[in-house]
Amino acid sequence: MLIKVVATLVGIVVLAALWFKAPQVIVAGFDTNLAVIKFLAHLVPAPYGAMGEVALRGLGADRALMFGEATLVMRGVFFLIAKWRNFTVPPIRVPAPRGSGVEKK
Image 1 (cartoon, rainbow, N blue to C red):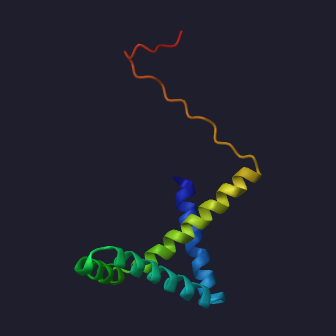
Image 2 (cartoon, rainbow, N blue to C red):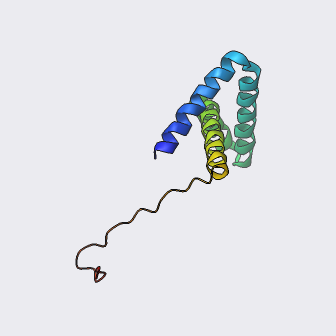
């Protein structure tokens, strides 16, 4: 759970840093996300696709996709670092409930 929160926060920080350093990257990402939304809207039957596209654009789906993509990239980076460092999470041992027939001897 903690790694998800950290990945999200680092993703937002990276997006903010990119916004100040290279805003054309962020704008290109927004344009790409908008193209994906339009493509998916054309797959839905006629009146519903257009209505869905307007609703998604109104709710800021392109921006939400950008945050999701940034989080996904940071989780991938964390995963690669963990693999590179041979980091393993120790298994969590959950005790069996009482009366379940699985008792320690």
